[in-house]
Length: 184
Image 1 (cartoon, rainbow, N blue to C red):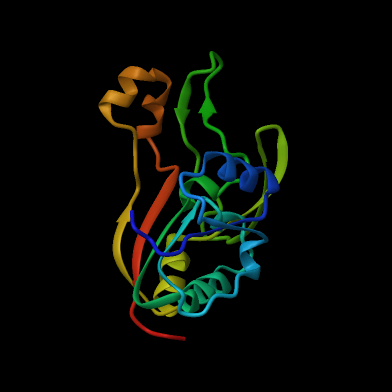
Image 2: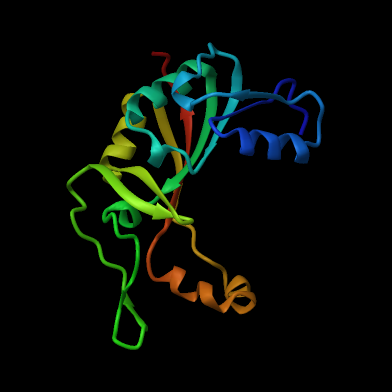
């Protein structure tokens, strides 16, 4: 869309390779590193992070690094797993004896910290935070919230994929659009 510079950062070589294979522009720069190691200074008008921050131990450190990477009034768009989803390490529905989903359990919501869980057959470590922590850390890092969204499937997507109907019963992701208003 006319960007003069695009940089993609990921800790996974597989994800970097996949992005390189799907690239639409030869000028995209890819950096294989943990997000915690980024070190940009007033270089970008926009930073986007997709579903990474629930794997990050020190959220404030990352928010501060994003602030430093952005130009004045730069935009920051991020998504992460919703705190209702990460509150319990057992990220699964309560079901009855017939396997029918009864409800999504929320427990230990106020106890922030590590959650060891399964994802695609692998043990992973995630960090649960309350919505209060997620938002206030962003505000304290020099950002102003522009929009917050807890997306859910549309009626059209549910018709196409009926198994997604239960995704209207609880939030799984939170998306936040913010703007840099202060340098750190």
